[in-house]
Image (cartoon, rainbow, N blue to C red; front, top):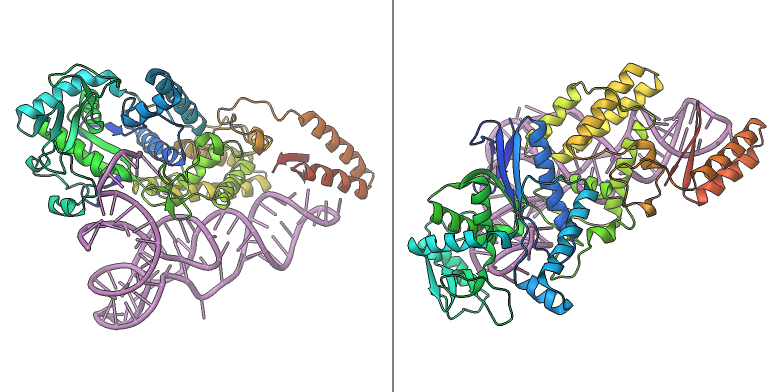
Length: 470
RNA sequence: GGCGUCGUGGCGGAGUGGUCACGCAGCGGACUGCAAAUCCGUGUACGCCAGUUCGAUUCUGGCCGACGCCUCCA
């Protein structure tokens, strides 16, 4: 039984799908005017693990992740770059897909774009006006927040408190400062669509209401996103969908925590963000993934070189254990799998799940030194199998270990082939072998130091010498 | 100001009313020509103050501190 923390209730509860064996989930995706940063990566990876684990647990998953391809920032960025909105958004959508592939994030079943659903948004806005919860004003359409009784429930806010804390100047067209825009009248030169209220474009929140209803229905199982979307975005989504469809909308709300830098939220406005592709210049995407999974998805996670280094070291230990073992055995679940499942069933406790992988690595190393082949391949299969549920350990171990960190970034999808200078390294190892055979340890140590200076570590074993980068 | 999350050993990070996380780093041992890798061992950690309890890091209350949301943001 999978238990999930529901932001709406503040408690964990067993997952009960509306349709037996089928999970329908919607996760807020990106606004595509820039590259993915580590914060996006965390959300992407966190919900990718949710998706993978649900599938592993036997569910069919219909996962929707939207793409916001029209909004103020996109318009501004395109104008600043002197390029069209289409060119800009296409570029960053492609970049996002590349980043996802690097991070091992599976493609969701649907990736709807806001601009493809404008007609539906207009229709929902009309319904909201008919129902008396929205009003047109100077070409804008606003949602009258006070008309929706449950407003603030998700974020635990009261209308009065929100008004007291309001830091935004009141827009003259708003009847209540908290009312939010469903439709924006077009300004000259801006992209626009025809509507009953004149030319304009949708507000941000309405797209998610319309696209989720269109692809998943007006009542589905899971809705996720970053903590910062809880208010106002998800609150507004609820107000829109529930009022327009007279529905329950979402059963379980999930929110991932932030990535911090020096204990501060990584964000565009603070300028303390790193993009996924920058980071991949000096480490492999799988390390980033392991780093994200090293803490539970709801808590904060601190981005630092040392924490990344630790994630790398932990992952390397797993790959070292798997090295040289054929990946041909079928996974047979043992107590380790049971422990893994208990951890994951508890609101996706990935740190605990990773501890299980480490325990398997130790057992594997022990079985290896005992030369218990049956046990070795069984444990290796279980380790790989559970790793796959987290989207880890998908590479060939030897390839992983023989790929230089600085040439990383292209290794998540195993492509075979070791580093280019492998032949040269092998030659030096052979020379050293000869020296050792002749008991010329001075020479053999010289060769080893030579290689070490290039970041290559040698390991002498019963079957000869192996090498890896570090 | 309102609302909320959190505070675990050198670091990261789970978890629990009373023997165990796990990883990184360190130290000792085994192994090794020496290393590396691996295995074994090793740390009186649970913000502060009270309360409940035979016993609290784990429950309750208060305090302090950090962070977040209240405005676009994963």
